[in-house]
Length: 298
Length: 174
Image 1 (cartoon, helix red, strand yellow):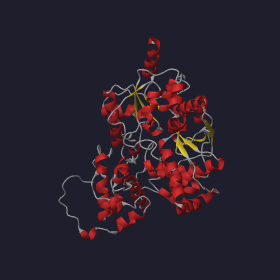
Image 2 (cartoon, rainbow over the protein chains, first blue to last red):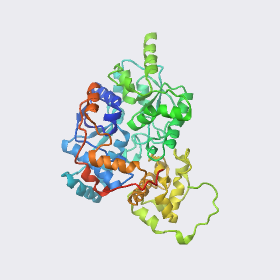
Image 3 (cartoon, chains in turn cyan, yellow):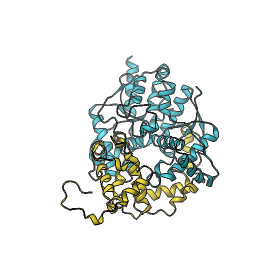
């Protein structure tokens, strides 16, 4: 299968999650996935769905039409971008009247969309198309002894109707499987499926922080070495906001937050710099020491 | 939204039966009448656990009863995290997350929304992205070994025409 995708970065990643982008590019290159730069891609539409559903669909369709023009499926890295683009691709495939309405709007900017365009989150591609066997083969430095907790977030697997049920909503395994493929231990925990709270920031910061804190409290009690995410919103909520959450609730968590691709990159022997590990708000030093310590002991 | 027993009796004359019809015509609102108020949505809601002002079952009931003012003016609907937990579990197949979005869309048309919404819309109109990149950002990207990206996109604005002149009355979400 030809693994060439139009790379959809969205708004947040290029500005606020460069470490995620770095690690995705490094892991893609290692596993033979070609990610094509598409400078014309803009907002996925997700942020303004709350303001106007159809305008949001038009924004998503603009991006879909750009990928269609290039004859490429889309690989996205943000879970919310993935859900927005996938849902609109599915919706416009199933509803010709809606497609016509959206095309009327796209005509304003000289675009037309026929569809469907296939949209996949990078981590879904790793799990579904590259497969665990090939990933295990690429591991040169198993992260033995490292206790990692998967955070699925909301839009990586939901709404399930747009994702063909590639993972179970109530008992997800994709990220746990990938963590185990890296040689690390996947920590099981009760709040695994719980939202990061990030989407509530716009309406009520305190509630958003309480939701995130709840997960951090459980993971601290389970002595997890890091939380593993696949979405920059979750990354921002747990990593960039962690200090603020600690201050607000007068607690210390000091829980490093890694992107799934950084974990896999580490297991493939890649360096800290290549994976952007020096740029996290919560320092990742303890994780590195544990990995290097295990290597030294072996 | 008040919790617990309430001694106020709803005055039938103030109920607006057209509200439910209106919500049902919005994309995502279609299935609202299938709700049989089991409360599965509220039981699993991560927001509800920390903020009693958000209660999806109650919001659906308020729409069905026709409490137009409260539903479209009070800020509680904006607390929905769009996490889809309720939507995935609803035994009646009500697309609850989409329904909350439909209610938000209706509130926005009346100018009721958190202040962040018009800010985002205006940024997208002007730049086509929520995080416009400048030269400094691209220098940082280059330092991380990442390719330069355009700072903005001028063909996104025309797609936001329907949201022209969007302004928050500064009520909802505060």
